[in-house]
Every structure is written in C-alpha cells, then in structure tokens.
Length: 282
Length: 317
Image 1 (spheres, rainbow over the protein chains, first blue to last red):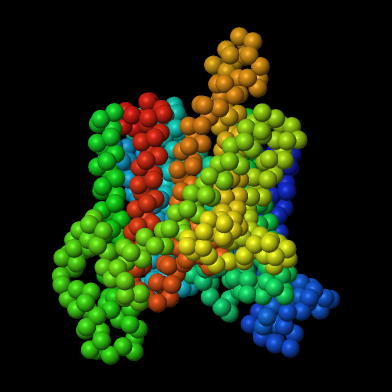
Image 2: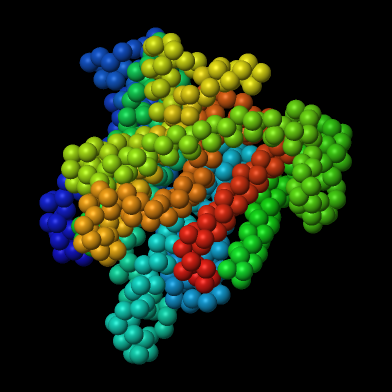
C-alpha cells in the first residue's frame, strides 16, 4: 500500500495537472479540516455595525450584510462542501460499486436489471431529487446529501461494471475460478483491487461535481440552511447586494471554481499516472 | 432492428411507469397526508377534509395512482391549488419561456463547442490546443449561476446595457424578448460548450489514430484534409450522444438560471410551487421533467443505433 502511494507520487510529480490540481485540492482539504476547529471569527456572530466592510487588516476579505467575516464564512463553507460531497460519494460508492460488481459477476438478467435501474436513476438528476425531497421534508443539507448521493450510485455502478467486465476476461481470474473460488470471493479479492484506480479517478470527478451540485442546491435554497454558511448560499445572498457590494459575489464563486478546477485537474493527472494508456487520446 | 426497437420501446414504457410510481410514492404516500402538507399544521379540520375530498385522497391508494397515470396520458393534470387554473395550462404557458431558452442555449453551445473542438484537435499539443483546453477546464469548473451573476455584474450593473432579469413577455415583440434571453442563454451555454468542446476534441483525436485515416494519409491527403473529410463525420457519433446526455444538465441549468434572472419559466414555477406547497403542481412538474430526461435518453439510444449498426444486436448501449 505504502509502496503504491510512493510510486504514484513519483510518477505524479512529473505530471503538471497532478501537481497543480493536487496542490489546490490539498489546500482545499486542509482549509476544510481547519474549519472544524478554527475560523478567524465565529460565523454565527452578527455585527451590524461592521456590515459590508471592504477588505482590511481586521477583516481580510471584508464583511457581509450582517457584518460577518467573509473569510471565516468561506473557510466554514469549505468544511460544509467537503462533508456533503464526502457523504454523497460514500453513498455512491457504497451502493454503486457492489451493484456494478454484481452485474459484472452474475451477468444475464441480474446485469440487465441493475443496468436498467441505473438508467432509471439517471432520469432523476440531483436537482429533481432534491426538489422532490424538499417538497415533503423542507430544505436542508441532508437533502443535498441524499439527492447527490442517489445520482452518484449509477455513476459508480457503471464504472465498476465496465471495469470489472474487462478484468473477468483475464487469465488470472480463470485461474482463481479453477482453484474453486466463488464469484463473490473473486469479486472482492481480485476484481475490486484491480478496478480501484478507475474508482479513485471517478471519485475525484464526482467530488468536484458534488461540490458544484451542493453549491447549486444551496444557492436555490434547497441545501444547507443558515446559520451554517455555504458557498452557494453566500452567492444567493450576495445577489441582493450586487449593486453596492459586488465583491460579495466574487469570493464564494472563485472558491467554488478554484476547488472544482483543482479536483478536476488532479483527477486528470491521477488518471495519467494510474493508466498511462489513456494519455494518448487525451 | 425491429427487435431492438421493440425492446427499447418496452423498456421506455416500463421506465416511465416506474418513474410515475416513484414520484407518486415520494410525493403522495411518504408525506402521510398531502392535504396537511399543503395547508400546514395549523389548518382547520373542515378545510383539510374539503381539500382531501377535492384531491380525492379518500380513495384507495391504487385508485389514486391509476387515475393519475390515466390523467397524465390524457393531459388532464388537475387544477393548481394556488393559481386556481389547470396545471396543464400553467405548464404550457411557462414552457413558452423555458423551451426557447433551452433551445437557444443548446444552439449557442454547439456553435461554440464544435469549432473549438476542431480547432484544438487540428492543433494538437500546440498553443491553440492548450488555450482551448484551458477554456474548457475553466468553463467546467465555473457554476453557471455564478457565471450568470458575473454577466449581470458586467452588462447590467456596470455597463447598464442589458436587463438584470425579468421577462418582457412575447407581446412586447422579439427585440425585448431576445434582450431578456441574451444573458441567460450565454450563462447556460458556456459551461455546456466547455464540456462539448472537450468531447469533440478527444473524439476527433481518437478517430485520427484509426487505420482508415492512415490509409487516407497514405493516399496523399493532407492532415487537415483527412480531418475535415473523414474524421469529423465519425467523431460526431460520440458528440451527438453527449449532446443528448447533456440534456438533463441543461434542464437542471435552466431551472437554476431562470431563478437567477427571474424568468417566469418552468424552473421558477417549480420553486414557487414548493414555497406555496402546491403539491399538485410539484408532482406533475417533477414527472414531466423526469419523463423528458427518460424520453431524450431513449432517443439518444435509438440515434446511436441508427448511426452505429453494431449496437442493434441488443447489447447494452
């Protein structure tokens, strides 16, 4: 495990996308981690006397219409994005990968059933799922997590199935089968480790998409609710003050774009490192 | 081809039916009593009973479900609780905003993306390729609603050239309508174009490595000639597929962008319906949107099989 990591890093450090994307992603995760312990100012504190201040030594990025420190809100927002995207990815991997592996191992009607279920889930983009959930439960972060998580399931199932199908054709699997191993055991012991690099790359892509989706849902008021800051919600509030405090509309958007770009670049770099064959066509 | 088509149509109908079942269960069964969801917890018993009667909630669940599906097929979607007009009328009137917006965005994104993809592929590993790919990376990473806000900041707040939102109405003439559609269309189209340009480029690069291109080159045709004459047509297969699959993103994008620009389309309607707890409108709109995605995916499947005969055998597409 450790040796594999060292190997990835050794190749990765020669790859421009890996270095730039990896650095941005690392910074994002560090900031998100930091947000659980420390922010320059408490984000719940309303201080109307200091509202809509421009950046200064006291407030590095200025304050919003409630006098809250923008930098603190951005840091807290990173933490929020990570939690939502992380749990949604967990749902996607937890349900999608076993489904994909089962489809590849069993084939036949089971494969058909799982793939049709996949197609069906695709018909409910996270926004539509979130709308349905909100209509009955009201808005909240849990909504975003469920809605984005549901949309992640068919994505991971598809990737896992596709990759697993090609591994099933390999000779070492035939050897394992003739040694008497069952389909379940082969899937867990041989297929899963061999498709893990594809799954890791897909995880970075889905993480980026999850952050975008969370921001969109919060912007629409379906996701994270105040007083918890979220990047999307910050943009929604900034829209009202765009005429006289346009800076409020800049920072959260930049944070989203930079993070998503970092994760996407990292995913690209990682794919190059883990699967050199793909380098040619990209 | 006939067996393939029959199989696909059967799957389409089944998927649509399951979708109606999911929407029905989530919006009518899970909340317990839809009438109290719509009227709130402080509603009088008499009012609640009247609404239950009006919505037919006293009937058995399966009767309500089958009636709803039958109503969906005939286009009779009931009366909106808050607007007091037929839901089908409400949806049709809002579609006159959403549909042209989505169509304009799709057209613009294609017009930007395909030439950019060709440009990048024909200049593979050169500065132009790098420039297009950088545009694509940025375009994918920028949320469309933030891009919409930046456009408003520049063209409406600073330069005061275009309206920041609102819809003049079709009666005002094509000029004002186009003016209110311009920024939303650009905001919707650019992120889509970023993805499509990337797909076009990689599809072209892949085709350019095929043997038949090498044969064409051996016959004396130039690199550019091979690209325009042979590679482009073959590369369009995955591009068309992605365009179809992008439809669900376009749909979600339209819902968000309509809310940024206060355009009275389907996206605005669904949010108004949620805040007014008009479950009748929400239920019908959700199934309409999910149904649209299912039908478009079905059409992409068919189109794919028409273009590539190998897929008609019934394998998973």
